[in-house]
Image (tube, rainbow, N blue to C red):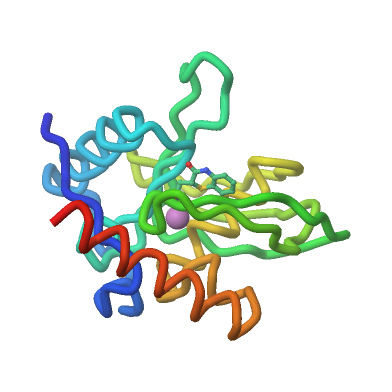
Length: 167
Ligand code: GNR
Ligand code: NI
């Protein structure tokens, strides 16, 4: 197992569109395990492969209180959305920034598990938010893309200032 470095916004590699996983082999299983370790260590409730500079459609999520329900989504596709919710989001690639984003309240997602078996999951609330946030990453989007241009500019300036202080 290994901890993987997480790309920071506005790294242009966060804009890459990830390619479907064609074969679930030892490399993919290793990647999923390393991403889970990286997510738990951060700590976060989700991580997309894009964030660790691997541009494949693979996501790990665990929204449970006790970190006991790791979910691995390969080639996830939202088949159905319903309702809407406005929730505060954060992102491991945008540290220290939190803001409200409107998302669907419920989603039906189809994906492959680590055994290559097709799964369909109906999710709501925080899990539904996280699935939408992670699939956004696979499509090259971060949550700040949903905010106003003014807020995006402020966030870039704040992160650039932070980077100067920590450098
Ligand atoms: O850890 C995370 N928390 C979170 C909180 C609200 C909405 C979305 C998230 S996902 C985030 C981890 C992350 O950056 N995943 O891409
Ligand atoms: Ni994120």
